[in-house]
Image (cartoon, rainbow, N blue to C red; front, side, top):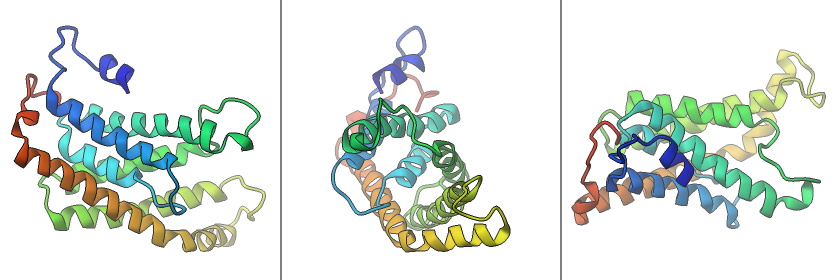
Length: 203
């Protein structure tokens, strides 16, 4: 995350504003909750993507922030929590392109839906993100997988297999969206000094 902040910095250090660092910290902490015990699919993916889309002003940074935060958490999850399942160090999980593709698509949803942040918009975005994640990742689980017939029927089987996890996905998305947005709005209200910006183009 530190390298991410520096790599996207201007050469004159104007990037070091409190607000952007706070956004990055929120995203990273949320992503790192994946290393603690939790129900299957109860994850911060959608919450981080929507949060970034809503509050990071530059769209390229908004797209990169959830990807970087999730990549860092993937390294820890794959090489510490699930290390026994791999023979060597794992940089990316098989099928990662569908998970990370979902993050990008959810962030784009946030760009459209969260131009103005409200409770209804955040919760609606969270539920829409859950549906999108389900459709994209289960399509990825089916595509090229010999377990499923590479037919429309096989795709439907894949979606059917994913249905038991949808509830936890929705609950996780709603929970982390509420925590991230609520937490940031609380800081905005009770610690306004953290909202100071030296470069308005950044966040």
